[in-house]
Image (spheres, rainbow, N blue to C red):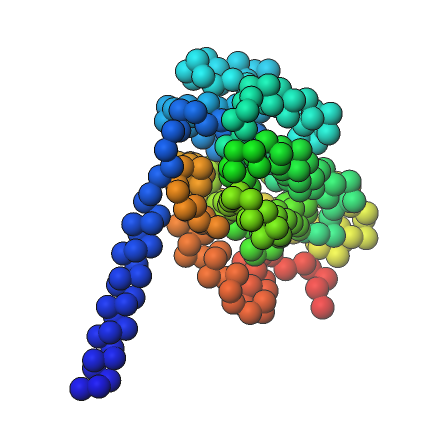
Length: 323
């Protein structure tokens, strides 16, 4: 009877905890129409969709676009309270100008949220195929850009006791390929963790979005294959010989199979997480978006490294002169 009673008590406590968590998770902030949110990378993809959603919800949206066309296209489909500015997150001058413009827009209210969404994925491929500049081209957007935006806009966020939402990736939990992408997303994870712990005393929340694979410009096959051919062509004859003449074709075939199997076309699964991070009274620390994130990548991140190593060896082609 005693063990049975203990099990009942434990079950009741777990159920109660779940109900309290769900209720707490559903609570939303008030006065959305008075709050400003700055989003980077709004020309297309997640950032573009998020701006439209926040605009419809009533936020004052400040959208950073890389191109004039992206800015014009977004303004054409948005309401009068959405404003755009040209922004290159790799340029400190551009980031500073965006902050000064934002400061004038928000006034004494401060900035409720900044969403660091701008990013690039290419080049990706075997690590040996990369040159140093191939790493830098990705790191300066995905890592340096996030740090520059966050630190430059932090005083405005602090004034509003707002939110910093950083877009990482499941590949910031599992390093599945070479190049700067995984490295940069691991950096976003650690930067966000450090920042969250340091500034929580001031009422600021730092949230991390970890999308799985989605159909965006980042996962488009044509640019991926072009970059792989470019990397292959820049290899020395000795390195190419070590992989074998058929390796590139096999590697591209694997990429096509993976993207076709796991890429999700429903981008709202990611933007819903971003929206919750901005509107919830008690936002989560991490959001995993997509079925592959929840069922494959996040569980893999808790497994021994040898499990991931073996899995990737089974999926990826083997070099012809491997030992």
